[in-house]
Length: 258
Image (cartoon, rainbow, N blue to C red; front, side):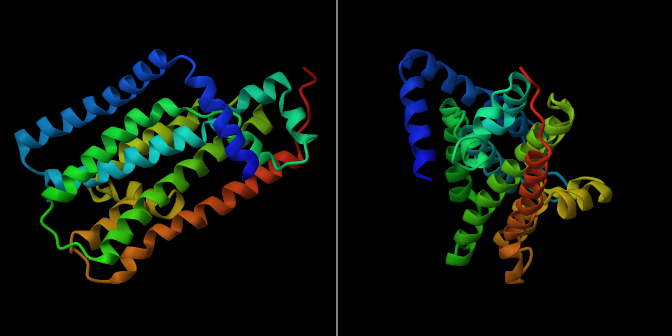
């Protein structure tokens, strides 16, 4: 991890050399989800609720999802851009270095300007916590932290899976965006507003439901079972096969010869 933090420090210094550009990028990253937030606000202003979920309950999903996605984009962006390393043959250099490929790819790229999206998500989360009519306990606060951690793990796992595709196809596939950008847009709402098949897929295959919908039931007192508070731990179970697929891809990697 010492090497990872050195990568982080060097890339932060490089990006801060152009501070005006960095600030403008951060503001732009803040405004992008703000338009989605504004759309949700006006929708609830018009209709009041969605299948029994009110505005602040949905905003809790929105805040956790966008915070998790922004943190993942900031610190796991290397996997999102991994296909270029394979195409250019630069992944060969990573293989001959005495460090694991996971750490090297993670440290190859950071997008610190994503702090703008994180700032908006944090502001919405604080506002929502103040407005929600629920009695906060230590377990509920811990559940909220686990929801955020689970979201980060799931998005990171999806980035790793999409990067692993490059070992078989050389180029990354745009279909992976269905589960990154699409997963972000879908998981900002409670899962039960969707068709039952979608609920099952995003609970048992890609467990976004374990990152927001199921623990949200406990936080909002819709379920008394404390096991709902621990469902975000399913994110660790999702990451394990993602890392296994990555290791399989690394073992069968053949250089492009670039």
